[in-house]
Length: 182
Image (cartoon, rainbow, N blue to C red):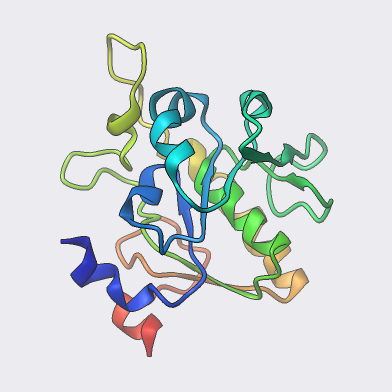
């Protein structure tokens, strides 16, 4: 059960990326940047009682989704332009930028492993749409943005801690969930 593992963070402000909103209404925001996710999960997502936020232009067709445009002048790192996020080649990294816009000064990354876990790719198989063959693994592409995110966060006085000790992201301090909760 996820409750036993994630229960201790229920009182924190949580941005759930992609289908993490299914963990419960204790997730404060559902954030996504992938069109495939929206097409597969739009009915469930619409029923989610908390704000839904996306940086994918398709989201503008749905009045119940808050749209944050991608900062085309800053693809990597953290955009400081209101209403815009750096895409960083993935929803999770864009969600970091969203957290900064919400005023976060300390951000914990949970589940940012950037590798296969039990032969699964960060839940993408849960919303794989319209493809007859598996997508190539995107982790190397996703990892490119994190040094820029780390540089911008340091300049902005934002602390980012990776709570995925086996993560391939090595530009932030890593701690266990137990350590993060202490």
